[in-house]
Image (cartoon, rainbow, N blue to C red; front, top):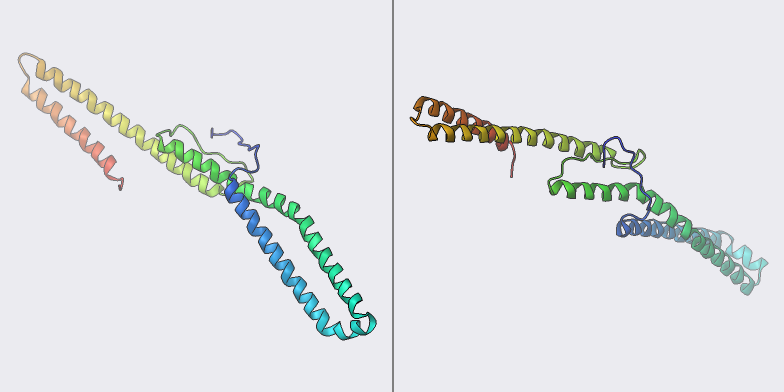
Length: 198
């Protein structure tokens, strides 16, 4: 998460539930497409060529050919499963990895750590979202710095008022000026805080 550091992931199965669900959806779509295509091919073939094939091949031989074709289609689909799974995990990794990274980063932000910048790999998805998150972090850093400066100034004014109140004799004009300054500083801090909607 450091700025300027190239971030790299070693694991491809980062968000297992999301990625396996994604791969499952791809596999379901592939199988559904294959079944529909197979049905359409067989239906078209049987309607247009069924009578001709029945005259050439005996009924048992024709069914044996159809069953052989079905088994080969099923076997090729089953052989494709590992390849589709690997491609699905690799493709989902470019989304799941950044989501996992963003969740970790937001968790550290929720704990009050604004010292880091969110970084992803160049080819990852969600780069624009990360740019927006980093913009929010930079804005919050600037706000926190202003509020800390305002709190430091208020603390100094309160210390000054305490000293003026403890002095003998009490200089009422100086005390009034110090109180006015404190009120101004509190007003500035209030304006900074009022922009937040909670």
